[in-house]
Picture (cartoon, rainbow, N blue to C red):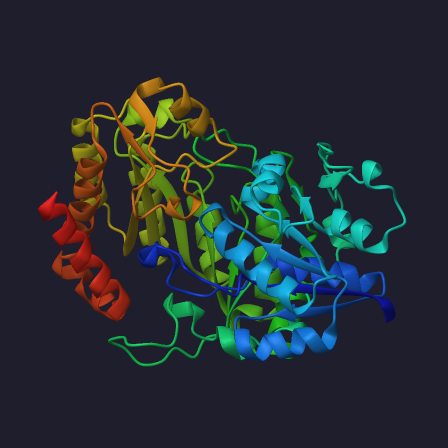
Length: 472
């Protein structure tokens, strides 16, 4: 190892003061951090991965004494990331803080302006940019995907470092993690009060592709629209490694749209079956209803895929067309029927508060969601995330949208604090959301799932939410 270059990478911020308890009541492994750790090690840079125990990790961090600390940040956790960076600086004043992830990628200049504790912002894909910062062999002006301060000015290099051959990235450095801390991820909760036995699955993320070619107006694409794939042999190797080295028994593919390349997906499934991997693990994916067909679903099921999630977003065809989703309610029903036919568990997600949304279209969405033969669903309230077309529309009051706040810790999909419509006030969106959840999960066929996923935090949150809506 090159002892002159040491980097501490944080799986998540230490300090957590999130408001979105309903959505963010869990810890999860971030594959991007594990990938960057492995990439740095490839160039003989010593890496430490920091989990979430502040007291213990502060001591380890001081002993490791990194030259750089890398922190991730979704929009709703950017304040947590900044607070964590301040703790790092208090322990190690000379350590340079690098922040990446969706929020700083969308707002690199603004992030450095707002948070003086950050020294660098890495935008988009992080492996190459992070390595070049740490090595220090390039002038800052020549490092792609970097925002930095120089002579009192903030500079942003907008061009991106993208890795076009994903096989050149080493396998994620899961060996640097205490994976036992993440054995409860499959329940969606931390180890705390719940109405079920402790989970025992180690639920590991894996990717077979990067990039998304679609044009949904509410989505920020950190890896842009250029789709790149890992080879099938490389994905198979990562699956085998997870099983043999880490005892993984369930994987989830973080691909934006699994199955978008049908030929490669068929080859992958056939290799999983032929190698016998499907006998020892299961896996799940997210995709689109217009990507899946019966042939592909049946093969995925045989290969061990037991769960699939679809972003449905609305139960109204006009809303689906205007928000860039470009699917239809009929296609949604047909594809979910095929999933049930092959024996897959289906999860769906919806958004309330689309541009031009009306109370009538929300009523259609709730009714549509309740009738779909699926196990789970998620009802989010539209969030004007930085870097999205929705944010631009809301700033211009297009479609009745209006931004209510730029307090970033309010930017959770479940709490509904960031946006409303002229025709549907915020409190009404929240009431629709609460009603949608109750009507969906109080159906007798879904009681088992509801009970198994209740936590004390979620019960308290729900009661406060209902009481707050009643008093408004």
